[in-house]
Structure formats: structure tokens, C-alpha cells
Image (cartoon, rainbow, N blue to C red; front, side, top):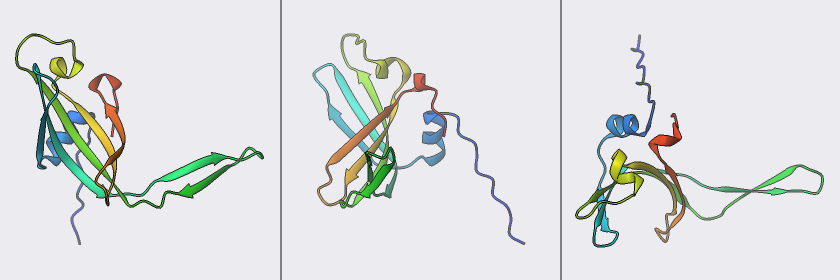
Length: 121
């Protein structure tokens, strides 16, 4: 008999970050007073679909032919000088869900998930 593994429940992006851990830290400057650190916590292959409303009221779903991937990124910003009104500085960061083209490595879509959004996973 195999043991049953019950995954921990996640209530927010911070829980997701702590459960998955790992990943590479990406950093880049956003002006002289702010430094942004981004940590890729999960990446997997994923395609995209587009929907088109037809005259009969139904939707036509067609595939996007590009090969892509979903990348979950934890992004934090740290003020290095004067104070900033940026939400990231006051709450420790936010989660970004990115869809990128695997061939060109260009980020096509980004969805920012902030703690104030009360998103659950």
C-alpha cells in the first residue's frame, strides 16, 4: 500500500514561495533609488489559446502556434535611498505570472498578483 501524500494548503503568494522555494534570483535596477530582485520559483511548458466570438454567439478557440512556458516569479523591491510610494516596498513583494515564448525568450504576458488581491491557489 502506497502512502497518501497530502500537499500543504496554500493561502497566498508568500505561502507558495515558501513551499516551492529554490529558483534563480534575477536582479535589475529600476532607477537610482530602487533595486528589484526577482526569484523564479516555478517554470513549466505551456501553450496558449485564443478565443473569438462568432456571430452565432459561440466562441471559436484556436491554438497559438508559438511554444511557450509559464514562469512564476517572486518580485521584491528594496528602497536604497529616499522613501517611495511603491507598494512592493511596504509589503515585501508580489507574485508575477509570466507567459514567455520558449524560442525567443521574450515575455509576452505578465499578470501581477499582489497580496491585497487576496488570491488563493
